[in-house]
Length: 346
Length: 258
Image (cartoon, rainbow over all chains, first blue to last red; front, top):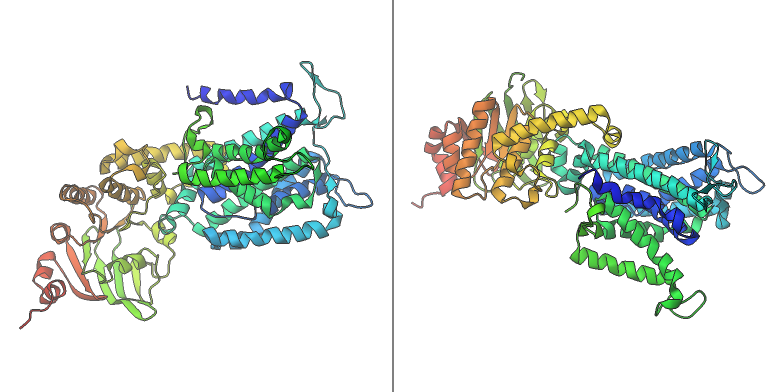
């Protein structure tokens, strides 16, 4: 029985065969956001450490990848490394950036860390706009497609699977699924093991955690670093899905969207992070797509509330409703196949 | 298990800016005995506990456990010497199951870090299994084994107190410090908790330091009693001696109006 509970997830293999570009692209954004949200949930949901700097580490992952993998030309510099290596290095780089912040991440608790981490965003935005050699400045720069052992994740070679031509989105779909699967699997292992218990106790009873032998500051730093690496990986996948990295995207709004994801999905739960990521990422896309048939939402260039604003109102409202009525988030609703074996949240 | 060292508290003073919470208090917990620290509210009992477990730093004086000096150690290093404590107001993680809370008591006996836990390294799985077995034994001993899978927050108060004690025992302590283990319990729960403390001593032979308000319980269980009042030690002795001590009577009952 317990083996079968994950079986519905196999349905996720189907979309590339049936859905069009728009949905596949949206799905890729969800996967990338889900990886980032799992990382943030380890830090904020399970360890009780607020971070409003998550988009900074996403940016490091994304730009780390484009810099390591990209080629130099007249405008931008790049190392031209093999793309898988570039992706790994980008994740490591995000981890190192998290580690560099760990003297602060270890000492400050909860809210205070949140405020300190907000500074990262402003530093990040400044660097992204001005370090044009690496980031391409305001207009960003294009992203080198992933090429795994000679298999390119773009439309450059013809590939037809069961009568469906596999372009960039179809191929990336499976790449993203594997990354998300590994990220979730690793997070479950951490949460259900010795470190996860310690993280929960730091959140719930910090003094008791110290007395029981948990090195509180070191643990907080380690989790902050880990969550930065998740953000880095999410950044890499985002860059690959977007095919262009633009500095503007990695601002303070994105950081708050990630917080909205974990609150809506369920604090401290891996499945919750994934559900929340889907909710927050898909909502604006759906509203844009169906704006002409929805009341109050403006079509592109029309009168009314812009779809992205409407989406923000909606998930702002969702956060309030969930905090009031569903403290365990959407994943607390017990959808059978999305409910993990063990919840670590109230 | 290695021999139980004695705990020597010498001239311990703790000041919070102007307030003197402890004023050169000294006592010794002899190996394998149950030593109670009693006193009216605000006497400094909990402060004393917090210094012994490394949560507060002493202003002056010293605490030695055998040859080790605990005075300036951080809480997790004190724990590593085999000193476990419970908290007066429950300090359990309410969302975690009883089993996970007890496993936290064994945190310092385990090694698995983030990477090995995330990758389900064979050594991590083996360690987890081994410690879960020991946790079950301890839960059996304390009488909470049937709750193992339930989130602690869902248990009645008396059971949560037992889980606290079980968690402290999970650290395989040589000195067990109990901060008001029966506070807020009803008579039946008190009786069974007292019985439990007696059986812990008999089964494990460890030293116990007890802070408690319930006089009846202290007098029945303790080998030796230290009485604090306004941060000062006013008496030490067997329960019978302390009960006769006029200073103690005055501290508890007030001065007779003549």
